[in-house]
Amino acid sequence: MDSHTSPYPILWLRSLAFWVVFPISLVLFAILLMLAAPFSLKTRWALLQIWVQFILWWLRVSCNLTHEIQGEENIPDDAGIVFSKHQSTWETIALQQIFPLQVWVAKRELMWIPFFGWGLWLMQCIHIKRGSGKAAINQLITQGKARMDEGIWVVIFPEGTRVAAGSPGRYRIGGAALAEHSGRAIVPVAHNAGEYWPRRSFIKRPGVIQVRIGAPISPEGKTAQQLLDEASGWIEARMAEITTL
Image 1: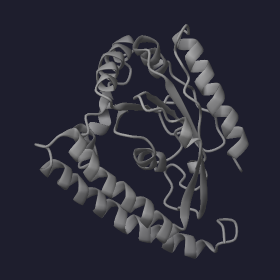
Image 2: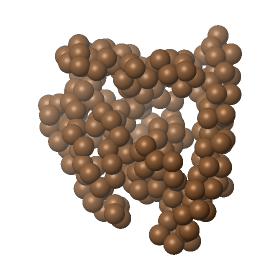
Image 3: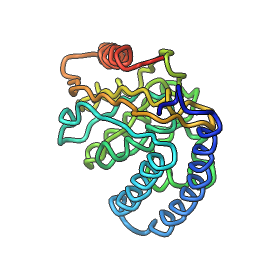
């Protein structure tokens, strides 16, 4: 039974079950991360993986929502830049299982959210001040290069904010500039999570989220704009294939 045939009360009750557990688990694991602060980032990452696996399991049990990935073989061994479509909260969780040790590029305001923001800080995210223009891009290039030199992936949502399913966002140049200056490849990711876990929505719809991972895009001989055009073009082409709205 999918979201088109499931009675609304059942969807609501399933979603309620998910939301009862989700914030409690988030707080508990944030506390565990804080207790693990004296240890290495890899240790905290291993701890975080337990939470990610639990949430994806609970999402399947409570809401009958799973995912299917095509293109995992495209993930290279060397750390690079994940360019992901941003429709939902789901991908901020699932990408941590799909890709190796990683940091996110996030707006600075998120760092002040209790527990969630503290977790971002402990996972050494690159926090950018919105509206700071070239300074933000320079910060991203400097910190992003340093992270990847340590073997840590950099996850970027180039649209900058969640975009409703079926709507293309405006792709920003920062991640492509990082690729140009670091020489690291971009791995584009498309998914339709927003159809099942919509932004600002209480309801989670049952089904199978489709994830597509593209071949690495080499920055060699390309400008940041060319890289952005290539990555965003690939993502939006895949979105046209998997979007069901």
